[in-house]
Length: 323
Image (cartoon, rainbow, N blue to C red):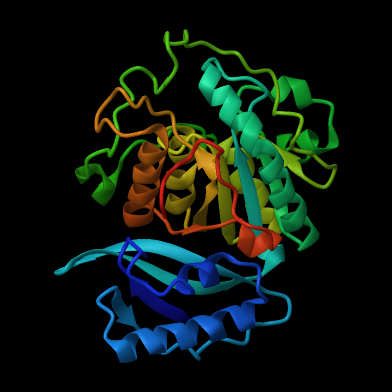
């Protein structure tokens, strides 16, 4: 395992540092370059570097594995730091869940952001599928639309397996003691005037391709049984919305963690339902960033899509955050 940590703000680091975390260099070269950069920073006494462990361990990975750069937030006596680690995943033991990327949302702004993000998700899914990962499309409340498709039938045959998993998983255990980082008192709509909540979706957005070898399900019990039969151990989850469905659905992060899966959020392929006129009164995308930070600290690590696609990470056109 390759592990190191840096402060949340990368501005104090060499300009070469951030690109090495994001560009599509071959994995082995990428981490060798990053190793050199970190050693130089330590030698120069940079205060931005918090923790560094030996980086040579694990540089070579099995031929059938995919290396992902995981990001977590860890609190210690000196504060909260971003900690990165490299994990090698076997594609045949890895699934991708696409959460609630509907054709239309009741919120106009949410619909627009889903439409903008969907082509990037499709590129990620195509790359993940080509590498041997199993793809699960989970557009909740839309199963009737897909009832005659091969992908839906693959999951629906498990319909009566362990129905206890088919419910929302609200804050539990240690996580229950931590405050939610953003308010969603208006259901998170950021439009003026507010949109009227209600079911507006009928299917997954068409710009994300569903293939016969995939699965379609919105049931935690179906997906769990399907994963068990296929030997799935690792799950990459993406889609919308981080402060609602991505975390809480029966197939969401909390449920997957409870079942013992190795879970990571694809942080550049997600969004939040957050109204910037509500607490903590930051921009929509700053609110999204706060939710991602919460997930990284209390739930699971995150990755970026570029580790699978080789392309640059996705970024919303109106996202003005400085990373």
